[in-house]
Length: 241
Image 1: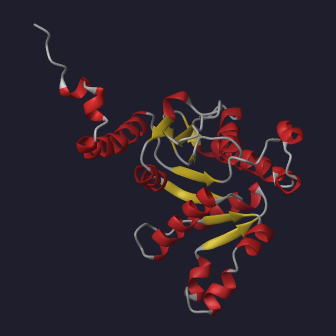
Image 2 (image 1 turned 30 degrees about the vertical axis):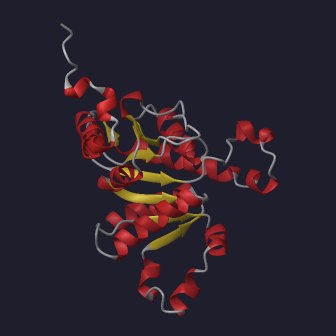
Image 3 (image 1 turned 180 degrees about the vertical axis):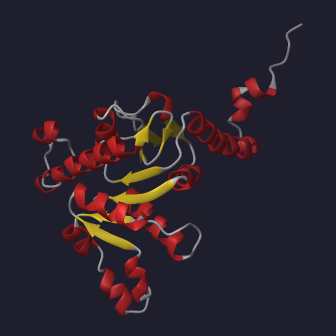
């Protein structure tokens, strides 16, 4: 007689529609428990495009405008290095760099921490065109999500600052999610730093939104423009002083 599979070992069952609540709970618990075990107390989140190449790959970039954004890769890398070397001590880790785990700006963030011999976190997402985790992520802190909502929640759970570099739809989604949560009081106020003042003032007319009354003028104080890693770190430390 063949023993039936145990429910928790039955992969087709776990992947079925009725088990969606179970999968959501697991996507909350697994990263949460692991980060506790790894001593992650707080994070600095870096958002930005996976398409911005590293300096080593600029020759492969066929879009001249995209190639002009390569300096942002270096600033993300530098910021993560500054944060990591300043804040991580032994088992208790404050201000751990957290990214979406892919290439581009995400890779730069994980790379800066890795070059400082410090931990960093990847919250990857399962996509039709699979996004592979970059090689600089701390293996024990490399997570892959099926659901965007659980991934977004983990981005904010321990965040002490959010740094937004140039990016596309995904980056805009993450930016406005953070702004909305702070504006509505759903999460504590924290530094939201837009990297590249000229870039962000061009892609979004923030003042026009306030002039039209679509946002309050005081909502413009939720975020700060910065152009260098040093400026961003100064803004973060000044906020918490």
